Image 1 (cartoon, rainbow, N blue to C red):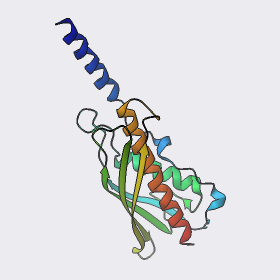
Image 2: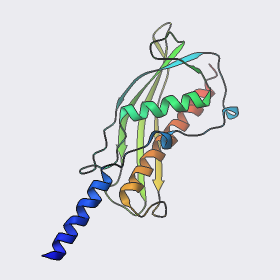
Image 3: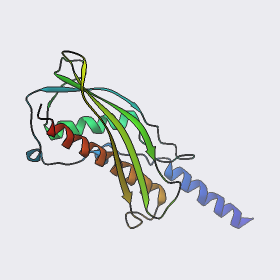
Image 4: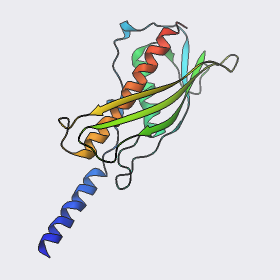
Length: 178
């Protein structure tokens, strides 16, 4: 009976500890030297970001939600200096929308690979016409050497998938030469 109580206590501690594991904003923002990208004097605002799921430590673990993704997207665009970023309430040349279509992650694994699929849509604000859109798929693997704790590895894989996805986006936007 005493051993069962110890195991049950340990399980509760693990579940409670995992409850606080969700992707952190700063770990989702890629770094690309601004000198590596084309810069525009045009303005951009973040439009609608939808989809994703909130983290659920009991059933699904770490997940990527629209609010966190939008924050990472905003910081990455600001840091890249591809466009001059303006507040959502201001007039801009362009707006970008993002739809988190799918996040695929393992239930358990030694190396944890997460896939993220996001559709981006760039709108010309003066005409309200779509001028560019692309579905970007990113994959990131957190290795067992990154953390011995599976929930932390899953979180690291999610953060990495967001970083890679936004990095691809930044390179795409830079190549548009707007």
